[in-house]
Length: 215
Image (cartoon, rainbow, N blue to C red; front, side, top):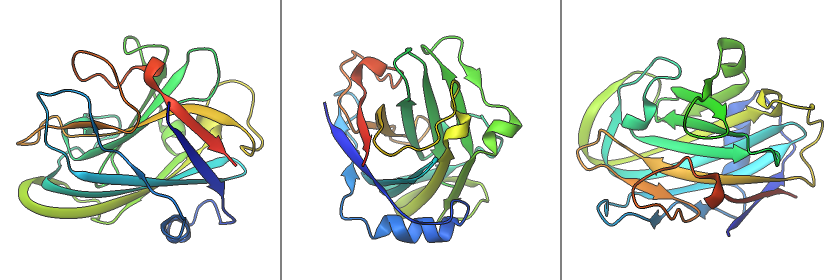
């Protein structure tokens, strides 16, 4: 099982420009580069860096790919059909996990539950607890072929998680996985950070989550 260390950084939780710059200076980037399913061999160059402050998780994704699509603009729409990065996290031991999925222009799908079926989608107030800023703006883009580089910075408030309020992330560990996909791209792909041992692509597999340590 892989482990990613999230470092505490002293930044203002709502200043995404400052968060982005702080994440770019961290000593570690983690590659999302595992092909688990032989049918999908295309591998974009994808990595991420992770950090936190008292009650916010900070992520910055870095992507270089040959096909680019960002057509979904409505919250909780099918962003996984676009050029998409994802963060799945189980904060507790009750089997409940969250999926945070983002296309390159920052459209976000957030849902929670104990399995793929019957997931609860985030409401407007919950969506507001997840800030994001991409390098390619917010306008939709019909699929293009070429060489495209983009990044996305995200700040996730622990207030979105059910259960007792998390007052400080320091010293905690969450079970996580990170993904890159593009279901409707000309060449679909499904990459993971921690290996997933299923016969076909399936990111809703908490048994295959790795670990995020807030140090």
